[in-house]
Image 1 (cartoon, rainbow, N blue to C red):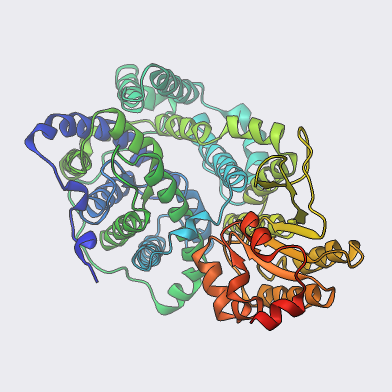
Image 2 (cartoon, helix red, strand yellow; image 1 turned 135 degrees about the vertical axis):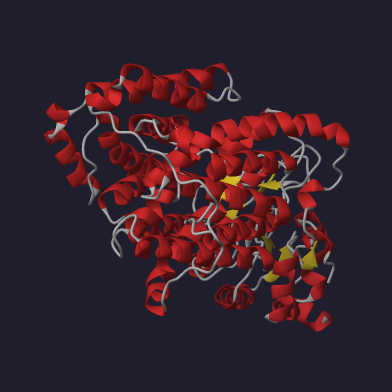
Length: 565
């Protein structure tokens, strides 16, 4: 086995001193974006703000060591934090030592699952969620974030429980809202929103947080009911394994699997979207990097981390050339967490709520909503159902519903595939599905059929019945049946039996059965493994439909072919 692709610091390969300037600028920019975001995300999960710093440092350093993508930024993420925060709150009181231990153990479990998927090259797991289901999932998460941050934005006591009940309680307490908190929160939201419109590299969240903090100090807003963070403890936590029991581990297994799937989906999307020019994305290696980040975070008492598309875009757009930019950002954040806790004492809670409100609207994919509604109404229903499941049901149940819907939709799409009778395009050797603008031709005694999907247990019977019907409809006039198999990339056991039945049925109808354009190596191996290649005969497997027709001719009978064997 070649171990070279798995050596550490792959994302730093080829780095030269000429890259230092770009990495330095990108690192400082990333830190400016990450500081308020990581604090806000930690608060979203019920953790002290400094825990977000340590999650970012752990994710950044681990990914730089073990990941492959030169730009990807790993750290605390607002997509997965509501997922595990809501579930952990059912097992322990938010912020309690037991809660923190569960979060650290969950991070360890998620990290191990993600790493194993990378090591065993199971990147296909990241494709379990379709785009509509992912869009609905993110929309539901956005609603959770908004609902959870409304009390902080309005200066109201924090609420807990199901989202629908929390919305009702917030609505009932609107008359108690603190106008100063609301002004600060909306002001920060506006600054972040406008900054992004100017340039993604403008640290709008940091600017807004600094201005809001100055406003609290200058105008004495603490005396007007505005809640602030208070001084954060300086120092770095001592590393150690999560202190959770076996019962806790068993209770966390389903949640760990769900979080791991979401992490892999987002990591794969980020890795593919921000692969530097000339570099092929290595999703499996990036799984290892992000998974190692969660394990490192767990050892420092933090929570699971994830790849961040917005922060990764910042690194790319700021001229980052390698993971050195993430290491520089991690060093700045670590220094702030270790020595600068007092600087954050007057940061208003409403400012962090404003940052998260911006994050929430940012992950709502409005354009995808509109495109799917216009182009695929059935799949738009998937968006709405997934979103509703995430909001109304326990959040981990909602995620499971989304994954199940995605798999069912994929299965349903495969079962809808029909056997098509192809026609020859006039004047060519091309065989094409029937339709306008140019009508095709059929050769007397020849049936060319295609099945435009992998052959599996979900569509095997539809394939068999469809081909039976086409043969039977010719009333014994078909002398040659050619299966155009260019789209059949896989054949499982159930489908193989259906294909064998089809071969026998064609012979009973007096027709020769041939296969053309079976290009998939996996399908070719299946044909040999299930004995279909021998049943059909190697001399009846062709590279093109035209070659099958020319070679077999129209006057040959199955008996003649069998004697030729």
